[in-house]
Length: 356
Image (cartoon, rainbow, N blue to C red; front, side):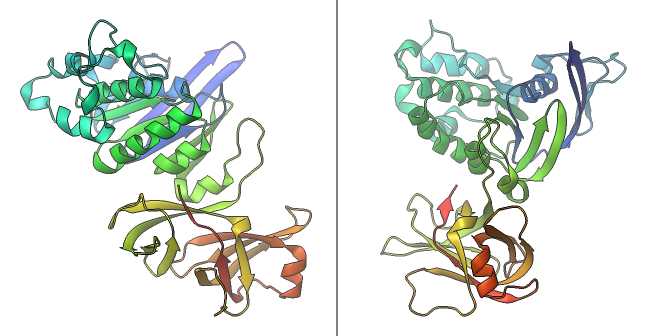
């Protein structure tokens, strides 16, 4: 585990968090600007030395609460990716990548350049000058350089925030590949719900310098509220595995006793994918329809009916065959006409499933 008890006090702002983070997968630190995400990340990295704070990873102490012990960043075996790529403009791409790699002892070079170049799609850029790269290409080079130091922990501070939407869409698939292929814990700071959905396994939600929520992404994602005042999105996120790819463009994904069909040819056979189902795309029927164009019709049990949170809609929590919860949003009139009750067995018709 990564344990961090962090304290900071700047004028009226106070940070006080107690984090226990897994050393597997991607942990997202999520929240609005000024909530303390970057302060936490920089403190864990040792870039900010906060008073009366403790940081450790496994059995290794990085900073003691009594301030007598502090390991500097360069001794922590970490990689750090900043919002803006910090590359050496006088070196080409390959020499940027090798800057840290060549300074490692041979027995510490755990990640090979060829593997990283393939995962990030940068092999064709190696001889190019840095000032001839796009913003997305520069950030991929910065990520590759951090990885080639063979860190035991990678920290990423909003690495996509400086990019426009097209560049973000360019780089996200490469980040997804990294998180799948490398067995490396990543701490990822973001205020983007879509980045959390696509990349993260674990989630810490920060607000006003405090931890508001933490846990698995699939349990918390549907309750995230956009920091800019956007509406709350009710959705279900399911971790699935691609089990079949049909000739008509449909793929089948499964998780225990639940199977879904969707059209997303990017996914590879056997690959684990994260699927999002928007609550308003789920309708309820008392009997399975044999004449519907909807492919995904699943037996469910009604766990809970919320009639108070929305003026005209009923919000349902439905139990799937694998005990996961599927969220549905239907009109109160429909709930009344169907006489829906808690504990009742019904069928959920899912109009759309998207790979996050």
